[in-house]
Image (cartoon, rainbow, N blue to C red; front, side, top):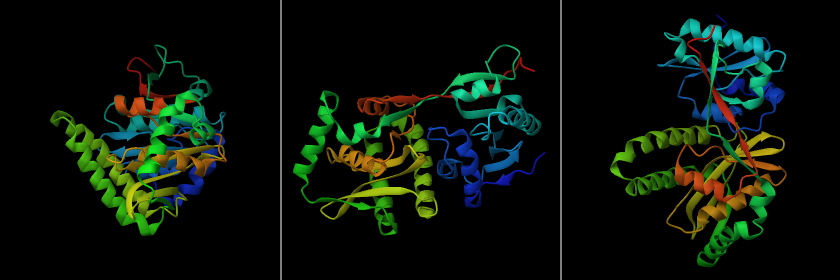
Length: 312
């Protein structure tokens, strides 16, 4: 078995070197998002057939958060070896999965999901990808309500300002996140609180990690102040030279129009990018409606590969 090294900041340049070989504009294909969101201590990697192979090792077994990153001619052999490693480690082949697989990889690896093949193909939630200029300009009837909400916010809160996110804001960000969480839970039905809290707790941990490594990961962010009180924050990064990525955005949702205003202003940070990716909708209907209301230009399709019990 190849030596699986622990994923740490030291692996960033190596990951990014191989990620550039695939150039995928999906939110999952950055070093930062994997370092921030993988469960603590679970990230592992190995170079196999000149591909960067990322693994997640936890109590459930060994799986892959991404397919092998490398050139097309190397990826099929790397995937076959990764499959062998997962099957060797896991108690059941059903635990050997590859998540967030970009569609073109299926062609490269010759995967059709047919009977007798090692893999079954399962659709995943797509990313919402917008033209950055659309989010900045908000032109036309499609964005009329967004313009109205922003204008109302600016009139109601003339003492608002934006600041580039920095270390001086970290305590205020934590306080806002806690307030946001309490307010959200207050509006949820009791039967939905458990699942919601599990999801949000993962995000809270990711935010803490982002703050701890903010400068090293070269993240970019904004904070929204109203009457000198921090009422919103957001940060992101660049997936490729032409695609920005919003990782997290939180505002005081009692302040109407603050989210729309902060989102538009943060889009300006990526004005040199043609597209801005805001990730998937987590399967939540309200989040889907919000993301659809901004008129995505593209959907970043992804699939999960699962072991085929009838496959070879």
